[in-house]
Length: 226
Image (tube, rainbow, N blue to C red; front, top):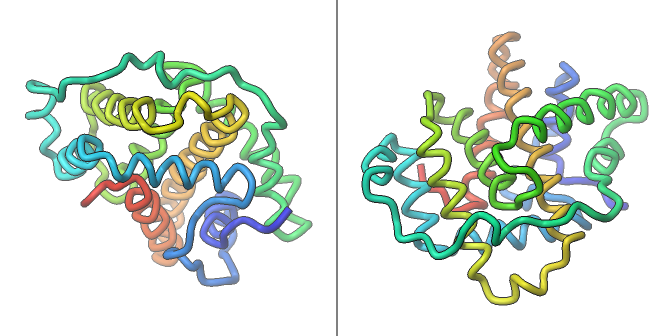
């Protein structure tokens, strides 16, 4: 398996409390080759959706309350982006492969625990829109830290749900592809949140800069304008 993008490697290093040796190429696609290509393709589809762009921009700029009062006319229920988990589910192990051998076991333990914690907290299990929305909100909390009301979080998830469920070919996307993408979104969200918190604790400007840069990359990939 080819290495993950170095930006994710830097986040893994942050999670382990180390400093990444290489400078991240944050303009490059942030996902891995196998499950990552699927996730990247889906995020690009989401980014093209006009309602998602409007909702993301409003929430990011602190203007989400107005949309809560007059939400878009949603096309689909969240059930449209449910999936049945299947496949190898090897996102964490694939990310670990991009790290030095001496860090892999520690990272696997930490990241696997984070993934389980995150999945337990998701408002709807086995749903791709919820997983993607969780990543978007994690990124927003890094670059625009504030208390985001549940109603605004729901707006983001519903906008992503409509964007995915109404895209051409959605019904042909396999459960394995949906599982891969959802796992990658959730794992990245937890790594991003954890790395941001570590940057605050260490007060290391380089760590803070890396976390913010990756968060902005995530938001750009979903079409969220700051």
